[in-house]
Length: 447
View 1: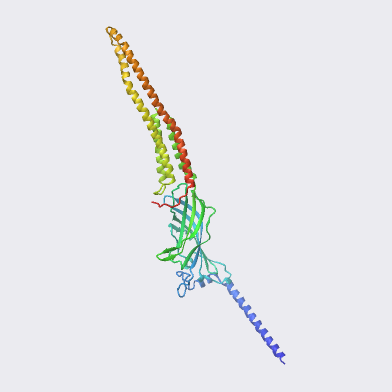
View 2 (view 1 turned 135 degrees about the vertical axis):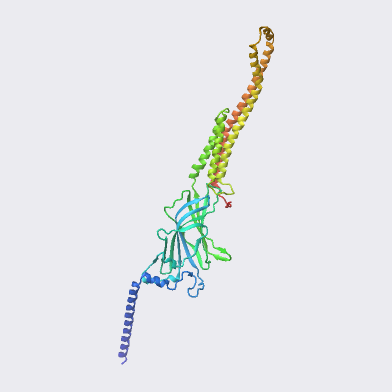
């Protein structure tokens, strides 16, 4: 008796389940058809409905209260070129892609729409909230807009916003020039949020923080490494998120060796030619000495005009100062030798003058002596012969003294031929060893 009723209940259940299955199947089909027919414009219209670009994602859009979760802005740089690093202004010019990514919960959309990413046009980007990150050490910068603004923005289903812009700018770089031009420099790039505190916006580096273009080349430097770091800062009692990037640069020495060190060293060597010229070649030695001094002075002036004025001594200062000292010392050596030689020569000339007058006077008076005076003159011959003998003896002593003083002047030149090159060689050994091995431990302040 109970069997027919149980059978009827089972039949009713089966029909109910089949009906639910058909409803679900039909509904999913309609939903799939509508999702396939939705356009990007429809998605953007739904996203921008009630979206305010002036409200940070860290605030609730209805109550405008802080949600307790700061926006994490992940930053990466793709460096296209480093055009110039100027020692005079202590700055560098750089062109790069500035890439940012963050999550904006208000820009979520359903993945079932079949759209993996939405690429926004530059005209609509202004309707999206963007982190207010700025470059602290920027002197002058521009965003490229030829032929259109060089910006891009992608939206992902999970609310991820990918933003990139091409920027070229000049950034300050406080350099330590104690080892210039054999130095290494660290140029930094510092980024902070200008208006949002760390509780609303946190800026951090992506891994890797920097990518370099394969065509990147620097004329005077080589990039050794880069070091990204965090530098959260406290302003007026408010904590702001901050990151910075240190780019380690090593200066190439080839230009400075060929344009500064070798020419100045050759001028020093040229000043040594004075030591091989005779003591009597006064015009030649004066001209050569003055030429080397003026050349070294001109070189120093031209080199220092392209450098920042600093209050400490640079490696180039030491080199040019020593080159000036060597060429000036060579000029002083000639002055000393010349004075020694001329004083001795003048003394000999003065002491020989009475003998010269006496000798010439006898010859002149002999022509006018009369015959009557011949006998009287002949009586004076023994006395004159004795005076002439004394004069010849005195002349021999003075000639010997003159020869010794002349030889003394020549010996000074002979000693200088060895002393100057050896001293310059020792200076070079000490100079290059010190400035290649020594590294400054502190950064002096520029004037």
